Image (cartoon, rainbow, N blue to C red):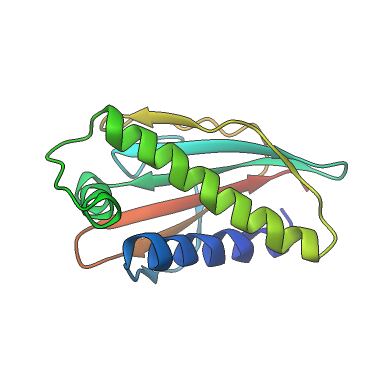
Length: 154
């Protein structure tokens, strides 16, 4: 996978959290993910295609992290992952992908985006469409963790 594709997603994610939720997150060390089991409790997944490559982005939140993000974005407390939370995860996934798409277009890569899907539940499966390695970057916040997975064909 072209490593040029990873940083725009990380940058876009941090920007969305700062501007929409007034939240900072610290990235951990990237790693190759060996399983398709989610590290979080709710995941937004979106596909992207271009003339040169195709791939997927997944953002997986622990329950504690997404509930805090929800409270900061909407100004109301949510007690569990429900339909409102899954809708917000889809919107966050869209915003992050849109931000990364803009950054990538400035580098000459032009992508079309699919509609995000959201899966919730402990131990759910994330299916990336590419056969390339999945790069997983963990993030920590004061309230919980989340993970971003990027997987694009070479």
